Image (cartoon, rainbow, N blue to C red):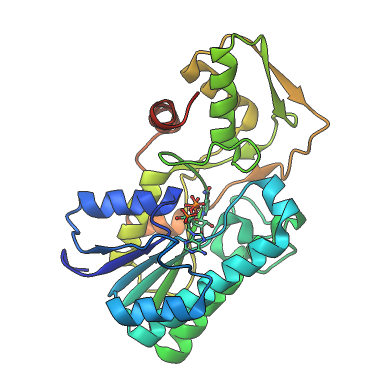
Length: 310
Ligand SMILES: NC(=O)c1ccc[n+]([C@@H]2O[C@H](COP(=O)([O-])OP(=O)(O)OC[C@H]3O[C@@H](n4cnc5c(N)ncnc54)[C@H](OP(=O)(O)O)[C@@H]3O)[C@@H](O)[C@H]2O)c1
């Protein structure tokens, strides 16, 4: 990838896409291609193909997707499977037809079986049944991986797939109904602090363990993989460390400075007890994450206060 190569970041306004744009700009890549949704709806096959044929990007980061938390995934499975499949089909086929040199597809750790052995190795893919609450989304993501592999096999193209763990950071979604656990906690503790609330209620028992990666570290991994990884086999991207939801809540409470109590609503589900990716493969290639969890949460909270907080 040269400094003036034309690079298309699909989903540039999202959590991941905006971090990839920041990273590329920081590294001196100046020829970046983006399109707002009102100019290019990636669900539309004709519009997507026309866009690729018109601009002929050399490299593509496929970070556009319909993404949401447990509630949204449970309520709108049809939209999750349809929109994600369409975006993948349209971008991957258009990339092939317009001669893209290399494409990075972003999957997710939810593609792995619900009861996969921990930490989860890449080889666990398709060895068991999925978590039912987001299986529509996961199936669409697995289809994206298989599509990249099929195109690599039949057409000899260089399309790779990275599987990030749970992400958080600048530009996150803090909507209480549609967000992931970490930004939702930031918002709850912040709002409780502002109104001097005595307590904050969080879902579940707090006992499950989860892994969190700062999104700018993911962006760093994405550019690293685009330069250094030429294999259609999937590759995990994470920290290799997990934390209990209870410890996470305490950490966020400390960073925000909320002094009230934390109540755990144990009538709400916990989800899988542990979800940690095995990151041995990307470590072997020479990549490691840099931002520790506390620093990443502080940066995210600063951003939230400046841009979204009440
Ligand atoms: N967030 C996580 O914790 C996480 C973890 C693992 C993997 N990932 C993966 O990373 C990728 C990006 O996730 P994210 O968290 O960055 O999501 P996000 O913040 O919701 O961003 C999604 C992006 O896709 C765009 N998009 C969606 N549908 C579109 C359409 N029909 N036409 C054009 N653009 C469309 C959105 O544009 P608008 O601004 O117009 O909506 C937005 O720019 C996904 O593949 C996801 O599976 C995310």
